[in-house]
Amino acid sequence: KALGTNSCITKLRVRTGVLDRDGASLLAQALRTNTALKDIDMSFNEMMGTGAAEIARALKENRSLEVVDLSYCDINDDTVNEIALALQENKETALMMIDLSGNNITDAGAERLVQALNESKNQTILDINLRGCSVSSCSDKRVR
Image (cartoon, rainbow, N blue to C red; front, side):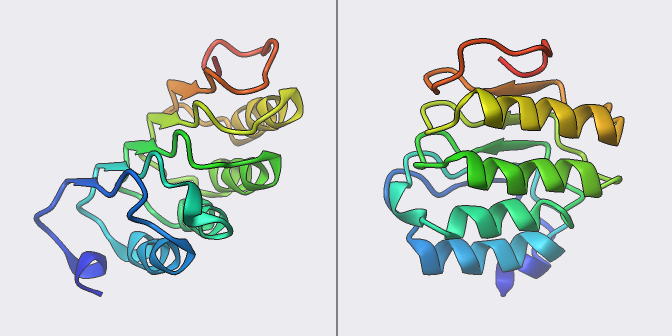
């Protein structure tokens, strides 16, 4: 609850196995209302499970995050679809960079992200990192 009303913390690191599904769900609730957080690193939390999808859904509402690191979190194309929906639906997003490297994302997931970026006319996203995923190529230079 405190993170949801936080007005001071701008950078948060919750990485390397500290987030399980329940923790990710609680964090997602806070991200929906937080207006100060600019940078969050949740990398190397493979135990998030469905919590990663809840984090993705929270991005539909968050307007302050600029950098989100979900690298090596065992994310697949289903969760990428949730992220893509967030990019499409959140017209007031501040997101500039999403790191999804080292996850189980395929060409289909990468193209879904490109489609979302194009359909939303999102001008803030500069970089979606998919290095170390199962992506052979991508049609948009913002998705690499």
